[in-house]
Image (cartoon, rainbow over all chains, first blue to last red; front, side, top):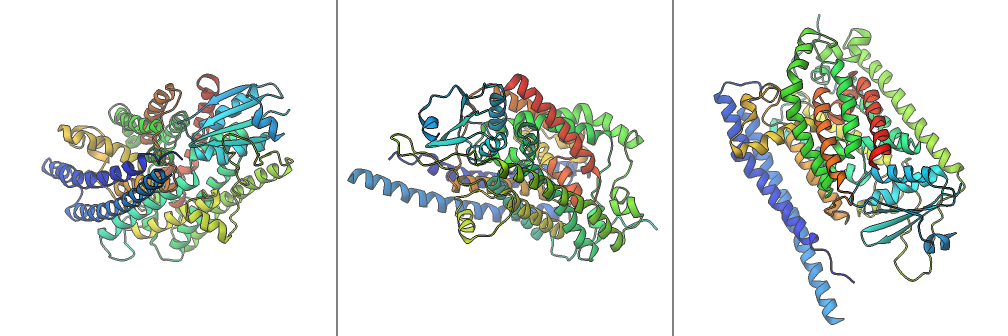
Length: 91
Length: 83
Length: 413
């Protein structure tokens, strides 16, 4: 039997990094750009403080959930790998 | 009939690996229209919905028999143009 | 007296709940679309390539249900009418032309705005390029096409000069936004689509039944690779069986067309009710987020399109409920494809498909912005809004898809 493909371990890690990256990006750049358009007086695209706070807090919760799920899948697949290695060394 | 499918070499092969709907069925449909009756078409795809849903639907619409052979991630979908 | 233009939430739960529900609905959308292989474009190409109406019928059912269910919520008074018509866009020449360009680009690239996102999340590199092409196309539109388009909208040249209740079918047909007018308009718009969808699906099923069991698949006792035996074609009709339900929950089986349709229609209702009064309370405006992500990509380089570029500086808020919806759509689609064992980075064997994907993506970007929305945020949403933009969008998109099918058939396949 061929070994399970490496993507089964790499993809969940990539997902967790994406979730963290998205939150950090939102907090730094999206919030920053919103302040910049406020400073330039462009209220057509400005998002109110209340909405921006809600966006960031929801993004943070989603980040936790996604990272948690991704790590759960990662560790499950690590166990599958270990089982495979064990069975192939026995066989 | 099944043996003919499994053993006969395809007259034409369309390799659409890496592509998704609607390309596999469009490519298969075009080749089937161009082929002579009696020809065997083989479509190579790794897009599961193409092998499990859209190509069987296409062969059913044409009224042509179909066989799917799976090799890991790759599906070989054979369609016989009977008429 | 003119109908109201002031949004009214159903209840005051605040933006946290709205963002969370939109994110959840995005996850559901991505998951279900991936499991059902739901694609507006391939449901249309199958009409032209195989004369199969199963998936297109499902699409019409989706539109019909999306008119009937939110229409019913408004008619019985759960959601105020203003929340249904407030975001109706201006209709005009650009909806027709934009939908044509969109249909053409999407069918060339191999993905509508929904399938582009869930396939990109399932590892299809061609759809990554389509997505990037769409971002570039949005920029081309913003700079070259938006200024003259906006001029015609302001002057009313082949365009209405107002959206909202002016384009609300109850108001158009009965000059009223009363419960009776809304109920009647929802029935008039929704029921024909439901019936037509069922009729077309029935036609295809009857055709399949007449063919004397052509799918000769049996397990053969041969040496060599395993024969994969596909089961009977997933029936578009929803029949409940415990074994089927278990296989679908365990991701062994894809969702049939009508199961996916029903879940997507309910997803639309969820967003419609919870977002009412707060924001654009319909399923994703993925095209806006295509533009937004391009803007985001440039932030780290110190470029802020929002401060100095046409369209970006007037039409695109920095962030929206739909942003989280699109991000979670990608997460949902990734989860569904990964957990079902389907996820894989796939590069087309024919490398020119990558170029076609990118070019098609540019057309998608230009088309969706011209039309003021994509197949989700305008076509499908317009039915839930009881507007008529979708009725302009649908035939034009079909014409675009047809053109692409001819181009593909002649030169690209």
